[in-house]
Amino acid sequence: MNSQYWSWETFLEAFPIILEGLKITLGLTVVSYLLAMLAGFIWLVLEATPWRPFNLIIYWVREFIRSTPPIVQIFFLYFAWPMVPYVGMSFTPFVAAMLALGIHFSTYISEVYRSGIDSVEKGQREASTALNLSTKDRWLNVILPQALPPTIPMLGNYLIILFKEVPLAATIGVVGILSIARSYGAQTWSYIEPLTIVALLFLLLSYPSALLINKLEGKMNRRFDKKQKKVGVSE
Amino acid sequence: MFENWVNILTYLSQGAWTTISIFLVAALFSFIMAFIAGLSRLSTNLLLRGFTAFYVEIFRGTSLIVQLFWLYYAVPMLFNIDLGSNWWVGVIAIGLNYGAYMSEVVRSSILSINKGQTEASIALNLSRFQRMRQVILPQALRLMLPEFGNYSIQILKGTALVSLIGLSDILYYGDIYRSSNLSEGPIAYFMVLIMYFIIALPLIWLSKKGEKIARKGVAS
Image 1 (cartoon, rainbow over the protein chains, first blue to last red):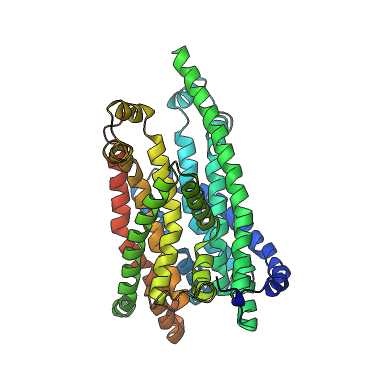
Image 2 (tube, each protein chain N blue to C red):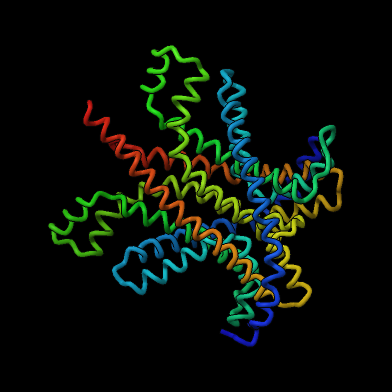
């Protein structure tokens, strides 16, 4: 290792400056995620319309958003959306990044919701029909309480993945930790320390959260297994 | 109007080869890394296991864009390594990043193979290598296919970042086009998205196919 390029002084000097950006980075993560949770639900509703051609369109639109790079989507919303006729308007960098990341991740989140709903046994629906429950009661009191808990670890995973995609917003000038680190590097011509700080901050935040989610997942799996066994015994 | 679209597409296609070549080599590199790291994490050697765990957690815990910049700015100075060209910086960053993610797929697929298979191979007096090569891996490989398909799409999406370190890929040409024809920005970026989607289509098909193969002939 070439220690002449690494200076602890720069490291200590840059650290508090970069830490300032953490608020924006975390804030953007949270609002994008909330948007993704909401929009993920909208995808489900759109998908449930009984008209098949419309379903197909929705399916391909979602596939399109999911399999194209989020950075291009961010650029599209920030640089190009104002030029779109009729509906175009300009966003601040923060809003553009929030919309792009939120919509991009909503396509994943809707898949998570779907897997949760599919995991509820068919008998539960049939039983609620037999008990003459209204649609509202069936969803709120029977299906969703069983569908949502198993999805919590998956939702947590996507939160961490989203958090790691948020520095993409630095490319359009959202002043998060990466953006500050780069401008610090441009001013002082030392990139190594600020970029290392950014990497460390990401690691420090995402690794413990990942451990926590792993633990949660194990707990959920055990609970799920138990349920299955009980059904097996009674049959 | 339609002619204009075709014009933009031909303009953007100048960057297609950079995107595709980085995608192919990075995907290959991450597959190799996935198997090396995935198998090493199951090794009995504590040092090897610890080292790979360190690699996997570092690369999974930070974001690709940060790793890309770190490799681009910091590594050449800090370790005095010249990675050759920016093309290689992109390939190595993407390969190491997704290799770390995919190593978890390799590891969990191997672990999910029924213990009875291992026990039977021991009873048949197969060596450790034979056991892995002839009994466990052929079964585990099938389970890895759908996830590998998904990650190949992620890798393609990751390649769009290389324009940030000065490579002329599809996004780079899209940016150039937009900055000289501001009013056509929406079409330009839409075409960039379309091009990525076209490259992704075979990958989407492959991952669907992989899902089918993984499910075939399996009880439950």
